[in-house]
Each structure stands twice: as structure tokens, then as C-alpha cells.
Length: 372
Image (cartoon, rainbow, N blue to C red; front, top):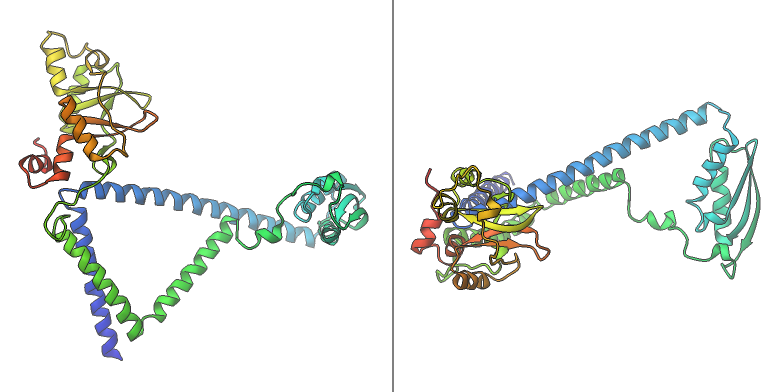
């Protein structure tokens, strides 16, 4: 038995090491590694924010519930005099969770004695009286309710009313309850994994994991290529575009755009206003429309020299459409805009060259790091 555990432990360690190596190869792949790293970074950031928000809600909910329990305990130990107006509000809050149509119930409080009037369904009347009697500060409950077997034609009982707590009890709704449910599920999952560490369970998991790892490693070694060596192609612009492109407002100067191009190692700057595309300025535009005319770059505005009538694609357009637009308009870059006009990214000729055939000269040049 000891030998079996050692063998399984060593095999599991090798499996995890191979999985880590294959994941690193995918993330560091020159062709698509940058996009995969960006997607992973965005996913981790989003999930981290969601977990933080959830834990904050659970903490506040637990603190408020603890304060409520403490107040209830102190109130039950020490008798207090509750004003009739306050007691009426407490009773109304309690009966709101006991009946379907709480608005039809009239509550009258006098020196701690509660009188209930109004129409109510027969199967809800006992729960209504119990809810009122349990309110802290209530000494007696007098029922003058008009009990109905069914809603019938009573106007106050028409409609679906509020959702009952009995129905809601099937699924925990508070953050504290959800956190407890997740903890219980995690404990059950850990117990199931521990139970599967026997010889048969472990071997079954390892064999399936080995097959998945073999396919993943083969894909990584092939550099994203298929079994016959063909390049794996993407289908939409969203998968190859550059997200968060460099943008400038229309009143920015040509000198500012030139500095951005130098710092970011890029050849174009998008001109945007309120997240919507207005034009594009390339390094050639700076030379032809600003420097060649003798204008001072510090005074010339991008809104005056940018190209306004430009072709664009949407993130869900096919890559073939982007290629066709580049050919038709003789351009090397296409802004990517959402259907509502908001800027989503930019796709360049180099991006398409790397995606189509990274072994080509243009694909290798585009995939190489920029010069300082």
C-alpha cells in the first residue's frame, strides 16, 4: 500500500509539472501568447473583483445579523417599554413575511395589545397571528380577521401578492447563507477527492488527465498548428485585434501624437471623443500634413490633420472582411468599432499576417519585438 501511494504521488507531480510547462508554452507563444495573457489577466481581474464584492457583502451581512441577534437577546432578557407606534411598525414588518397580501391587514396597537382586522385567507390566518404574537413587546393579540377560504371576489385578496418565505427557503438568498453553502460544497468536494485517492479512482483520473495533457502538449509544440502543419486560423476580428489602442482627443497637438508613437512603438494614433472614433493619424500624416507644410507641430491639432473618412470593422466581422477592406482602401490598419460606434480596438496588417502565416516574412517581422 505504501508503494502504491508513492507511485501515485510521483505520477501526479509529473503530471502537474507537465501541465504547468504546457500552459507556459501557450502563454509565451510569440504568435498568440500576448492575446492569451491579456484574456487571462482580464478574467483573473474580473473574478477577483467579484470575489471581493461578495466577501464584502457577506461581511456586512454577518455583522448586521450578529447585531440583530444581540439586540433580540438583550431585549428578551431586559423588559423594555415600547411605544405603540414603534410596536405597530414591528408588527407590520412581521406580518409582511407571513401573508400574501399584508396591505389588506389593519393593525391597531394599544398598551402592548395588538388588534388585527381585515380579510385574510384561511390557511394564512394562523401564521399571521403567530407572527404578531412573536413580536418583542407584544403582550396580547386579538383577532378580528375576516377569514376567507379562497380569494373569491374580495378585492383586497386579488393578485399574486408577495413571495412567501417558505418558497424562498429552498435557495439561500443572503450573502452569509451563500458563503456557508459554498464552504459546505467545498468541504464535500475535498472529501470526494480524498475518497477517490484509492488505486482505482486515482488511476482513472490520471489516465484521463494524461490524455488531455498529451493533446495540450502536442498543440503547444506545434506552435498552434494542426496535425498536418497548417496554421490554425481564427474566425473573427475580435480574436486578433489589439485592445485598448492609443487614443488622443481632437484638440491634441501633432507633437503629442508623435511622442506617443515614439513611446509606444506604434505608427498610428486614433482620434476619439467620448469613446467614439473621429479619425486616425498615422506617422505619414504627421510628415505630409504637418511637417511638409511648414506647420509647427506644437500648434497643429489632430482634428485638422487626421483622416475622417476611414473604413472600420466590428469585432464580430470575419477576418476575410478585414483583409478585403485593407485591399480595397490600400490601408494597413483598421479601427474596430462596436455597432453603437464605441471604439473597441484596432487590427493591423501585421496582426493578420501573423494570424494567417507566421512563417512568412511579414509575419516574422510583425511578431518580432520593436526597435528601441
